[in-house]
Image (cartoon, rainbow, N blue to C red; front, side, top):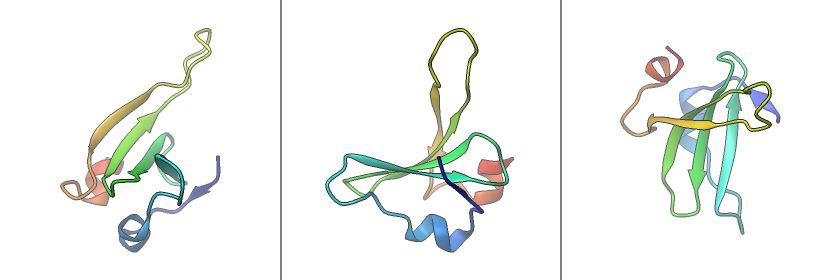
Length: 75
């Protein structure tokens, strides 16, 4: 999972990869913070964490990227 420093322009310019239903971008500054983009163009901030013993990494929606500012999502 590659991580990049989220900036307003990176978040705004991120799009779902061609041929996929959804794509993810992960923030290097805030552990677990991600951005999910769907093929339909919707973007949502998410949080993902590892839970030991369960073998899953649950993703929790935080909010729509159009409604949340980057500092709020990190915060």
